Image 1 (cartoon, rainbow, N blue to C red):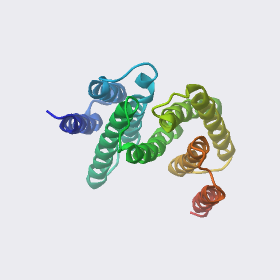
Image 2: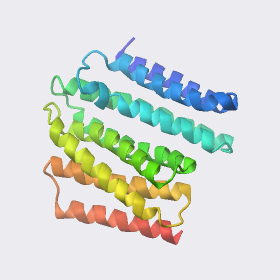
Image 3: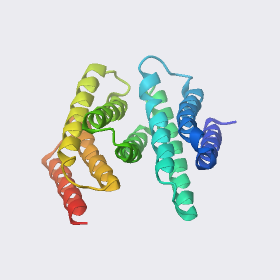
Length: 252
């Protein structure tokens, strides 16, 4: 079986397992989501183990687990999804997970030798990384553990996703120290942004959407800065996105 067909098979199996989570006994649903996230990481590991070493066990596997955790937990906190919406939801998960392991495979190979698909994988992984924050932050705000714990979780999620995303900027070189510092800055600024918006009476989804939009802005800035391609036009575009998101949320 070719590697691409193996990716497809694992994604189909994982998506099928996701559809079983809402019908599991209530006491087993959250453990089932955790088990599903672990399974997603193991599937990715089985497909990528050929060249994995060192920091790559983190940078190439983290998003598979966080994406599955966020999407699975979202199902538990929104049990009244219609059948049509669930089908779309499972379809989105299928596309995102498949895109994730395809992109991670390209990064895995690119770290050993040049590969022409690196630019496409870079763009796809960036978009999936940004999307990944939406279900994770939505679930977090549904729990609402208080400002301190929410801030700590937001910082942790933002740091993990930023690190694995910014690590791809330097392939095949390794600049882990610079990536670490940049990820800390992105996570810290996003956490401060979440604290600012905690004083506004926003619904859970719009609060999460706003934070995800700002994560897109901050992570995009970091990518452009590390690649040394940041221009005034980029700054204006990100600034405009920030304004439109804030206006859209507060005028809704």
